[in-house]
Image 1 (cartoon, rainbow, N blue to C red):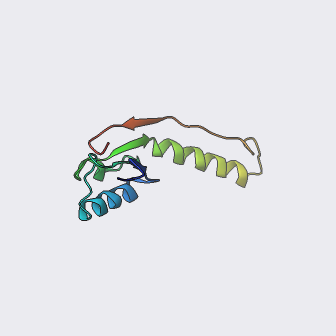
Image 2 (image 1 turned 135 degrees about the vertical axis):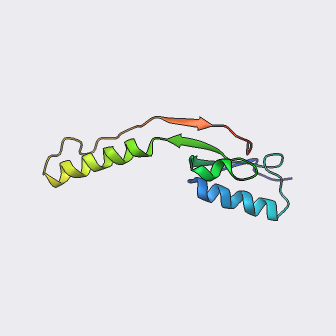
Length: 96
């Protein structure tokens, strides 16, 4: 009996590698262990078991980061120490 029933990887690429490893070890996903990733990359729907993931708006995140860096470059500190929370969406597929 396994101590864990699920794994959440910090990226889809790690989650996909983990699913591949589990298949090689004859550990069935999701019957024996669930796997989820983060980013919703195109490969999520091309593997077996299709990967459950957290989708984020990467373009929005990048735009915000560039804006903050521009402020820092210009010597403005409007967002110093501020925390930003951007929306995400859980995309449920076959890996859970």
